[in-house]
Image 1 (cartoon, helix red, strand yellow):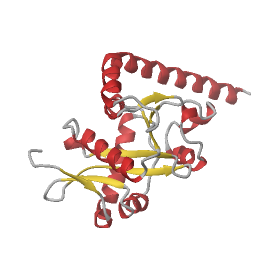
Image 2: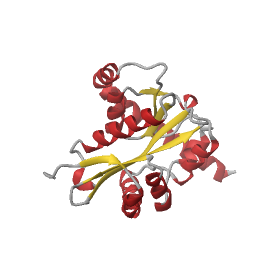
Image 3: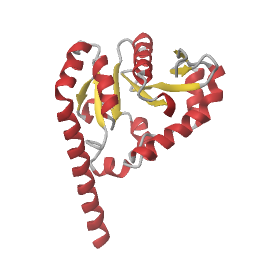
Image 4: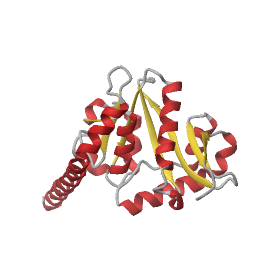
Length: 222
């Protein structure tokens, strides 16, 4: 933990970490009891080869963290997806550094694109707020069918579809380069309202689960 962490754009030589990364993504999702769109090692390796990913390593090549870029709607939208940090390095601040690096890479490669993310984690919401993201409705995200198809491997996919893709357990957040607040403004707003966000997320998730269970019970009763 005391060694300096190297955070850089991933390349083809980093493909050897793909299995470790996808295994940790799956384990982390199961531990949270929520889900992220499952990605294969080949998919992650492809992002590395395309220069559309950020990787964090120790000088001895120990893997620390990862995040990648997905492009949707003819480059109108960009998603910073799959943020994952190796368990020994969590709560060290490295996740924020990775998010900053992937955000910078997205802005560099796609300066006019809206950058968005879906998350169930309050910590990620705070990091996004620090970067200038704002909470939005799902209708403000890409309507690209391929993006939403990626949610099929998430444990909450049935809930998403039962709500006609208008709502789910995740909170949607968006950075619009043409219309956004400065990072300090969104970060200050999040800091003031973090307890409200946390309460809102718990209520939202509880309500969605309750409605979904009622719908399933009804379907099985007819």
